[in-house]
Length: 168
Image 1 (cartoon, rainbow, N blue to C red):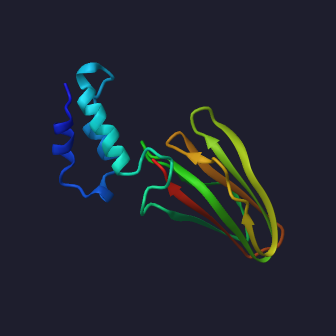
Image 2: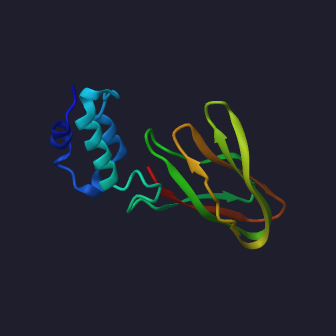
Image 3: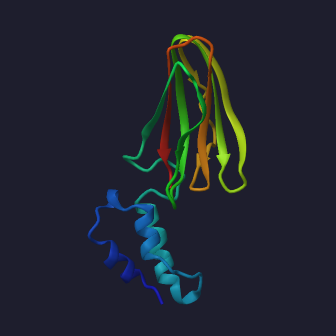
């Protein structure tokens, strides 16, 4: 039987900002949904609330920019990012730059379990930068990934940047 005290004991050496989803998962495994575990379940909810993991907003200090560069050869289906086990990331916005010519990017989310793709954006740019529309409700977890293809007519280099925030 798990207890809230046991959870606190195992997490007490960490600062609030350093508690990861993996830490919580490790100290609550196995934690079953049963009456005898009520104290541990309540403590888990409290820890998740304190570490800002249950409101869907970004976890502080986790925002990052994913960047991929291509040369004038363009690129076949290129891996951009995925999440570690227990993590969920939200794609906020992005930018695509083509220097020296024209290129087109197609951005996808891939379901890694069912091997299916959905197109997020298709943008063509001629020696400039295009801002990718803000993405609404695009989340990446351990079962999905972001991929891209770049087709080039005459550009010299391409850069994709995506702003992502960890929400769980």
